[in-house]
Structures are given as C-alpha cells and as structure tokens.
Amino acid sequence: MTLDDVRQRLRDARRVTALTGAGVSAASGIPTFRGADGLWRNFRAETLATPGAFAKDPRLVWEWYEWRRQLIAAAKPNPAHELLARWTRERAGFTLITQNVDGLHERAGADRLVRLHGSIWHVRCWNRCGAGDRDWRDDRLPLPSLPPPCPHCGGLLRPGVVWFGESLDPDVVSAATAATACDVFLTIGTSAVVYPAAGLVHEAKRRGAFTVEINTETTEASSAVDVALRGKAEEVLAQLARSADSEV
Ligand code: NAD
Ligand code: ZN
Image (cartoon, rainbow, N blue to C red):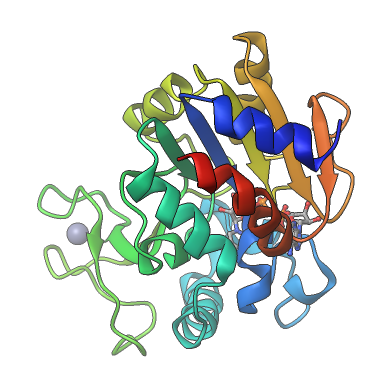
C-alpha cells in the first residue's frame, strides 16, 4: 500500500472522516502533550489537566492555561489545518473531528467541526451554577485575574475543556461515532491513547472503512490501520491532496 493507493481511495470515497490530534498543530509551534517540549515548569500535562489538580490549585492550573492561550494566540494555522478546512467546505460527506482545543481548525475556516475535548477559548462555572451551566467563549488575554471569577455566582471559572478522567459531551460523542460510518477514516497526529477518541478508528474499521494513519511515529493504532503513513501531517496531507483534489 502506498500513497497512490490512499489517493485512489480518497478519490473514490463518498464519505471521508478525519480525526486530528495535537500533532496537527505541532508545525504551528503548539507543543504536544507527550513530546519533549510539552513540559511547563517541569509539570506533566497529565498532572495539570485534571479536576483534582484544579481543586487543589486553581491558580496554578489557570497559569498553565494562560501560557498555552498565549502560545496559541501567537500561532497561525499551518497547511494541514488549511487543507482539512478546505475539505470541510468543498467535499460533501467530509467530517472533521478534533481532539485539539486550540481553535486552529476554526481559524483556518473549518466548517462543521466536531470538537471532542472542548476549547481552550471557552470557560464555564466550576460550581456549575444555574446561570453559568454551559460553556461560553472568553478569549480575553490576559484574563483580568487568575483564577477568573464566574460573573454569575462569583465562584471560580474553569477552562471549557475536557480534562483527564472527565466524560465527553454525549451529543459530541454521538456525532463522532456517527461519522465512523465512512469509506475512508484518517487518524492524523494523535498518539491514539486517549479514549474514547482513540476508539473511533477501530469503530470505523469494524464498520468497513479503509483506515489510514498519518503520524511521524508509530502509535497504538499503527498496527490496526490499513495503511500507516510515516511523516508530518502538513506534508503528507499536501501530497495526498495533490491528486485527490483533482477529482473532487
Ligand atoms: P499527543 O500529544 O498524545 O500526541 C501527538 C501525536 O502527534 C504523537 O503521536 C506524535 O508522534 C504526533 N506528531 C507530532 N508532530 C507531528 C506532525 N508534524 N505530523 C504528524 N504527527 C505528528 O496528542 P493527542 O493524541 O492529541 O492527545 C493528547 C490530548 O491532549 C488531546 O486530548 C488534546 O485535547 C490535548 N492537547 C491538545 C493540544 C492542542 O489543542 N493543540 C495540544 C496538546 C494536547
Ligand atoms: Zn457560577
């Protein structure tokens, strides 16, 4: 199986679904969680992105999010975001699912994005007060105080993202699961260890999709997919698009 086979599959496919992870934003300078540059003040992400960490030290957790918001605000979408965004607009039957919280797919102009893990630009009330029960956008940078107060109840605001150990929004999971009924499923720049996101490629395969991984390294999904393409998302996608697009 080669790049040409994948191109052919993409040309012939009616429904294509892509799942992206932090690797898609690496070329924009956003650190992945598991890469060497993912550490912040010697903390691992897994020790900060949890409800327990927030309960213990909300200011510390917010300082980390503020650092990430600054990095992301200064970054630009890269060719991988641009190409996937174009497919959401131009390919009927294309669904884009992301684990990323950085908003770079949206900034590249993606339509109909399924955001599995929320957005770093959203906040919600930690107390789940009635008025502040849902997420809302608050992209002020810097935030006026850390941790920021809930404007409804005066309690704490938390980032509008899904932390380790938390459940995903069931409507979002349904939308992602529905999109596994496709002809080609691409898993791009994700280490494929965070569930339920990591299960989507297996579900797609079970339902008969041709499955493709694009990653710079071998992952848990590599042996399960039909084709594992080793390389940078921004480069491999550009190569795939070159001829797949000519038939769109
Ligand atoms: P991860 O950090 O676990 O894995 C990143 C993967 O990308 C690795 O397998 C790595 O080999 C690969 N990679 C690195 N550079 C690449 C490139 N240029 N092209 C292709 N692949 C490349 O990330 P994950 O699997 O997304 O899971 C981590 C969780 O952390 C997610 O739930 C996500 O919400 C969160 N996260 C988000 C961001 C973001 O929004 N940008 C950044 C870090 C973590
Ligand atoms: Zn509140």
